[in-house]
Length: 197
Length: 260
Image (tube, rainbow over all chains, first blue to last red):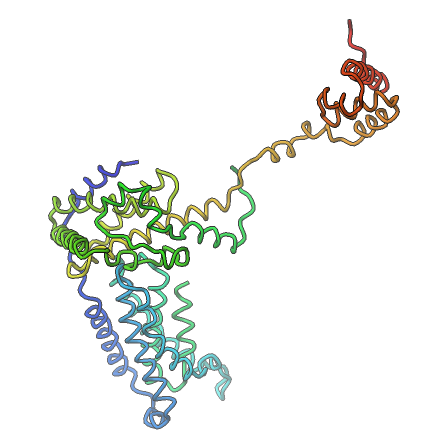
């Protein structure tokens, strides 16, 4: 085993200049901008759901979507805060209130409509298409998150990944509730949080 | 050491909790005085929350206000010095970095000594912390205090090491005397039934004086003096009775006579 003074000497010799991380709020802002761009891009390619205006009349839908947006933003902020060693891990509770509102407004459409037998025989259900959208949004966002924290998240990996997944899930759910006609929130939560284990 | 049954999850958690339970700083200080004094940070006396909070949760709370304002000024000065050194190190100044690492090592060691038992484990933990500090030195922001940043890293690394240790220990069972005697046939043959039963019958068939002598001196493991006091026989008589009894037993159990 190398002795501690030798180790210190070796580390000091290896003291290359490093670029300091930007403040966590700034990093969260960057990531959310990326998410927003992705949503806009997808909106242009896919188009909004046809019955969106109708749904906007329903308070539960509006409340659920707003809560999902809030959860996504707050979880992203919390994620970048707790990935630093010296911030309290109580920051992980930041998205909890909006998460509670969102979960209580969740329906479970997508779980029931994977395939359907219609006039043209066996068909792939709407659920499959919304699953594709889900992957398309959450995969790049998760990847960006992992890249942004590949050095910082090692001290409490479990908590950090859970909060990060929550943020991705909330943003994906917002997108799906705008783009697709069935409610997929539950599937998204299961998909995103399950994928981390 | 061999692979053995694992601990139940509850027992494992209890062991982990006991291992990371905070040692009240007030009690630690006199013992590790040299180490604690050389650290820059003031450790708070935890008399009010003694034994309630696992150390893994401690962050800034461990390093709160020193007792006097002079000490406070000294503490915050030291912290500023360290923050400035780290800022220089981040810019690539290796001399400042070496100074900083030398400065924080006693503090890290004091934290490790509180929770790890073996000396080489402590030194491994110190080096682990130093390597981690090196790897994530870009996450430190010089406008924030240095102590909580370092303490968070050190506590996490030490806790990880404890967890690994406990996980490894829970799969090992030390080999004791029981394992050795019970796994081999010969040491256990004394207890084999037939011989013992025959001996017992033979002892019961002895004349009463001889039987008493054997029961007290050999089976009861009394000394000659004690046996003499109990039976009111003389020591010489007891010796003679024992000798005759052993001879009779040997004959009855079919042992060969000792050749002259």
